[in-house]
Image (cartoon, rainbow, N blue to C red):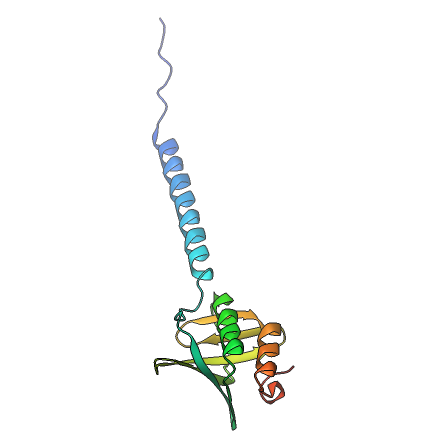
Length: 145
């Protein structure tokens, strides 16, 4: 008498496939979300700035040189989103030709600058320091460089 081989239970394989597909989907979603989050840059208008006001504690100054202001906005646009910064040291107000103003908090430390409000963005501080100095701002008042 010939007996049939025992039937294999398909449930463990199915469960394994479901777990693998779910895990792979979760990993892809996390990677795409991280890529989206960290690739964001500040939403600055394309308008031409009339000036930039800088405030750090009691120190207040303005940059009115249009080419320096444009270059500062370019550097701010290059910044990328980060999760957080410990503490902002000062503020930057960008005045536009149409009379509108945009305010940001600003910190410069070591080789990084952070700007932000609700969202925080970070970038390379070397060029920002050079532009602030070129605009007549005493960088030693509010940063380590």
